[in-house]
Length: 393
Image (cartoon, rainbow, N blue to C red; front, side, top):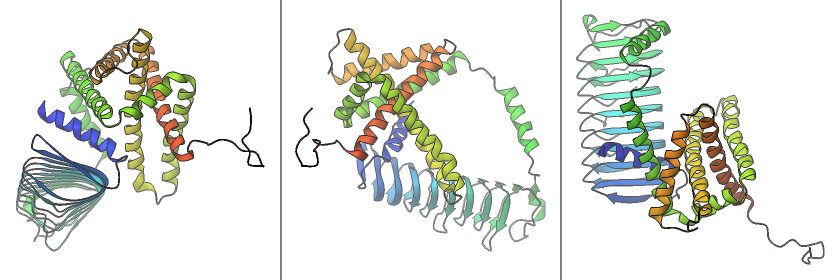
C-alpha cells in the first residue's frame, strides 16, 4: 500500500506539472524528494527515492533509492543506486543504474556511460542501446539498434533490428521481426540465437491463453481494491488542490453552481477542442510525435474535470442542506469522498451511472474552460463610447 500511495502522489505531480511555473519546485517528504516544473534543471541529491516531473528535464546528481522521471524531453544523467523508471517522448539515459532500468517513450536511448547492473526493459518507437547491461535485456519497438554488451539474455520484438560494432550478447538472443535478420557471430553464436516470426495471429493466440488463465469478470475483492485505490487517488488529488489553490478551486465550484447549463455547454466546447486536436495534429505529419501528449492531456483534463464536477455538485448539495459555504478542509474532503462514493454506486444502475459520470466531467471541464477563456481574454473593463465616456445603462 505504501508503494501505491507514492505512485498516486507521483501521478498527481505529473498531472500538475503542465501548470507549474518555469522554475522547478522541490519538496522533501519522508526521505523522498519530489521535483516538478515546466523546465527542470536539477542536480539531484537524495537519500531516498526521487520523483521528477516536467516538460523538459535535465536531471543530474545521485539518488540512493529509486528514480522516477516523467515528461516530454528527458535527459537523465543521475546515478541511481536502485531502479530507474522513465517515461516521455524523448528519453536519454546517461547515468549509471544500480539495479533495473525501465523506460517508455517515442524515442529511448541509453548512452555508453549508462551502465545498468540489473535488467533493462524498454518500450518505444525508436530504441538505441549503447549502455552495457549486466543483467537481461527486453526491448519492444519499431526500430531497434543494439550496440552494447549484454551479460544476460536478450529478447527483442521489432520491425527492424540492427547490431552495432559493440553489440555482444553472452546469453541467448530471442528476436521477433517481420523478416529474419543475420545475427553476426561476434554478437552471439548461432546456437544461442532464436528467431520467432512476427505474426499478428500469434499475438491473438497469446491473448486467448491469458483470457483462459484470468477470469473475464473481476472478483469482488479486486473490485473493492480498485475502488479503494481510486478513492485514495481522488482524496489525495482533492487534498493537494485544497492545499495549494483553495481560492481558485472555490471560484471554479461557485461558477458550476451559478450557471450549470452554461458550464455544461463550455465543457462540450472544451472536450471538442481537445478531441479535435488529435486528427488535426496527426494530419500535419510533423505533429505525429505530439499525439501522445494530446492523449495524455485528454486523460488529465478528463480526470480533473470529473473530480472538479463531483466536488462542485457535492458542495452545492451540502449548502442546500444548510451546510456552511466555506467549511473546513477536513469537511470538504469528507463531502468530496461522499460524492465519489455516491457516484460510484450510481454506476450499478444501467445508463444512469454513465450519464451521471459524463455530466460531472462536462461540469468540471466546463469550469476549467471558462477559467481558461477568462485567462486568455481577460476581464473586460468599463465600456466607453466613441467620445471616451462611460456608457450608461
